[in-house]
Length: 222
Image (tube, rainbow, N blue to C red; front, side, top):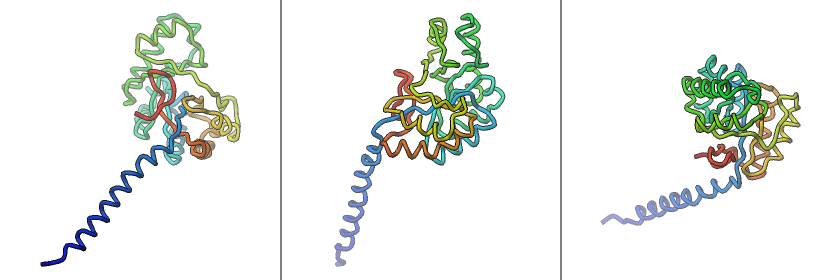
């Protein structure tokens, strides 16, 4: 009769590998001690492919607040955002000062963007970023109609205002658990900052999360 010792030894080794793999998973998950919401407004555009490449290479996910007019004219980039693991939100159709508009005008801006993003393959947005961060009761009434949660921001990167790459990195370094930062699709300095943003978050045990439609805060990706 052949010895079963080699077989038993092999099984024991396999069991140890499985056990170590099981114990390793929670340790990896524990690396995220909190989540922040990276957001990029005003896309999609000709800059979107380079932005998505930078985010993917750095292992980051973000919420893209798209303008309806650009989603309609660049549907392939909306699909690319989704395929890259990003979430897509509504940023109005033409980026007007909504607080100066009638309820019917606001409704048109919001609803046309919902449709344009859905038609482009971005799904039906659940988050809305008001242009310029301006809001009022009329806008909130329209958002409720479409089941949208308004998302402002906790930190403004100032990338729209010519902020340097260093300044954008520093702005991201101020984020704490649950907070959201405003960035944009188009600035070259923002793209250049992304690898350092990823390094900074990792050094603080923070991960790039999704923005909860329930709370408006960054949480673990669902």
